[in-house]
Amino acid sequence: MELSIILSQIENENEEEIERLLHEYNTENCRTFSFEQKEEEARIRLCRALLGVLGRVAQPRCQSTCLETLRILSRDKRVLGPVGTREGMLTLARLARVGPDALRGSGEDDEQAEEEERVVVEALKCLCNVVFNSTQAQQVGADVQLAQGLCASLHAAGGGAAPHEVGLFSLRLLFLLSALRSDVRGMLRKEPRALALLTDVLERALDVHWAGPYEVAPPDPQAPPIPSQENERAMEALKALFNITLSDSSDEDAEHQLRLLVAIMRHLLLLSTNMEDKTEEAHSHAINLLSNISTPCLDVLIDVPGQPGPEEYGGKNMAVVQVLLDFMEKRVDRGSNYKEGLTPVLSLMAEGSRQHREIRRYIKAKVLPPLKDVTNRPEVGTTIRNKLVRLMTHVDMGVKQSAAEFLFVLCKESVDNLVKYTGYGSAAGLLLSRGLLAGGRGDTQYSEDEDSDTDEYKEAKPYINPITGHVEEEQPNPMEEMTEEQKEYEAQKLVNMIDQLSRQQLIKPMGVRKDGTLAPLEETVRACRDNSSDSDSD
Figure 1 (cartoon, helix red, strand yellow):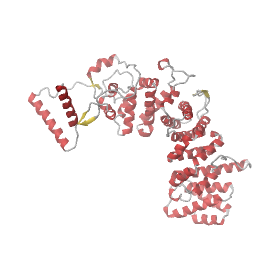
Figure 2 (cartoon, rainbow, N blue to C red):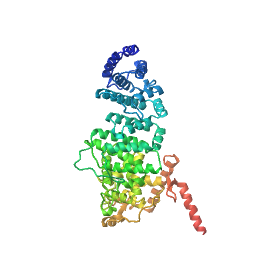
Figure 3 (cartoon, helix red, strand yellow):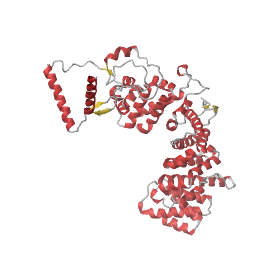
Figure 4 (cartoon, rainbow, N blue to C red):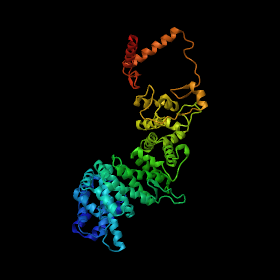
């Protein structure tokens, strides 16, 4: 389809012919996502001409066809100049009915209402593409308060009661604006009804029934999985909420709203969808959102008066904590995308364990049970402890720090306990970053309950190599047959080799200061001499 033919018909203002040609163009290009550069100027003119048609009074069917063409063109970020202007964005926002008059129709028959709804949906899809692909449009969207208008639209439509695609793409646009503009995120966090509105969307999508102030009634075991449409809206709401909760807020009403969200996230983590991958995606979004919420609010996850748990955990309900553990192990076993897929759940469980004793005790019993067999290295095996210890030496700094921090918290930030379960070699990176190479504890205060060692561990403890964390087979002593002169020669040879490598700056010998941090060896040796001379003078 020649764009020049379409442009000439638009100039003639023949609606029927415009609609026919655009429909043909849309059919040809509905799956086109990359465009030839030679027609770039013609596509820019077509964008400008389409906005002109949309700015005039036109029939809904013609409007929706024009918007579909504009949506296809908006996949190319090079032609969005006319659309990303204030005038272009306001035209699309008007057609999307962004604002308190969101779903006010013309009052005509069902067919007319359906055509008008299609216009709204296509305009929202256009806005999503344009905002995603154009920084100019992002700035204009913030200037004209598009996010506030979307909140007003959703509120006027009754939160999650809007028609499915209208609600879905309104939420997606809200997510994009809050993801791409920090000022929009801050504004939405201060907007009193934004959190409440998105919470209402989740309540409707997940069929939430409250059994207490922060307790959702348990799902019916016979109930069907979450329907796909409700799941789609819930996912978009969760992504928008994640962006909004990135900004800190100490407002009391906000804390109440966050506790409601935690309760809904608990409910979601116990639900399933009709597809396993969709269930995992829903749980992933729930975990990401929980990672943003202040840890004192996480008590809602386990404090469920209507469904008490075992006495050994103070009557706290650990069902969701087990879901988190299962999710974590599944992500570890996947063996890829640890940064985005695994670190959020490790961080969430570490912070929850640090703040809530019952969570820490439950997770430790599952991840770090009392040691019995110490004949293998901590990183060898199929238990979750073995898998996490392997991650402590992962090439990605964020992944290995998350795994090490999680295990450190389970050990109540005791260096001796961490080394017992992981070996000093695996733990060295964390201990270095914390300044704990010389031993000791972290800053967090934990309960005084002591860990009890098994008889098997007590028996093997004297023979455990603390570096590798296991009992090694006895090796022959290479110096056994040497004379004292030979030993002295080999020692001097090693010193010379280290000195040569150090002078060539291939290695830098280091020592440990009193505070547990590393320093050049010369500095630590000098400090030892100074301490020795001070003690001699007393």
